[in-house]
Image (cartoon, rainbow, N blue to C red; front, top):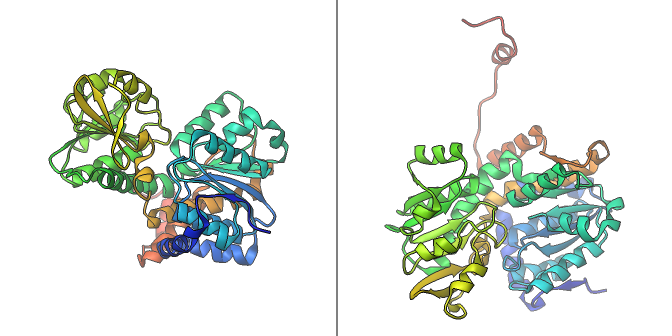
Length: 420
């Protein structure tokens, strides 16, 4: 029987397989986990619904989960993040049900979410909390079968913690995003590089000498600011948190309110997880030719409705992923429909950094299945020993060796009598 799916074109599958295999070369940690999963089958028979960006790296995660015995369905976590050849390859070559099409409309997106939930998952795997949110709002009959879930991104963790605080969360979820081998590397190095990649691919502009305004100074924004500075840009950071703002100042960036940055910025990049970070009064103050884009999970950080209301007519697509708005005689540009620019206009994070993130996802699924019975409905962090094991495997794959403590050193650190 053909594998159930809704993808753009199965004839793209062969090209997708080549790219999935190329990514695998850069994912040695996940490959080692897959080899163990193939032997041990720790997820045997577990129904998993995954709502993730459908990329070459995600394909390698899904294949790892399937190797571990999981019965998995994959849908997109963003309408513009799907790589259609990858989706086709997973269906045709790996017999994994995939529901994802790059550029799908809102109705199709939620139809695909429904398909994932019709799988009657025992475990959810989210990038943005869409599955968990939909289950709790509209598919509560599924709750009795779910042992737990995992969450990939900052925005999703924020939503989950809000649910837990309200007493609304009905099963335990592991915040993969909060593992050190995820947010310290994926968010900083992955988002930093891939965001700049998306901007350059969409616009083909020179960043050196431009003023780039980065909204927020969390781990993603730190990476973006660092990479923009490395390309020769003058970087301004906006923040609401005094500690993060102070850190940005000490890292050498100008820090100011967005209202002050709006008239001087050439490129604006949001990565905060909040709504209307760029708003109508900012648009009114921006210079002619200003470019706006977003690297936060949802397309709410730029007030697009407000921008359309200010604009003279409908926006014009002047390049792929570049929309031009006319506002009081000046031209303003929005990249990737305000969605994740690194996935809308580029390929997302490099495979070598996603190797650690998706190693966390695979081990989180195994951990959750083993320990769910002892976990109450709440948001949890993956245990430190798992985090360190992923770091150890990554270093080993990179050919990097580190020191170990001698017995004397170990003793010294575990006593209080010695010392001055």
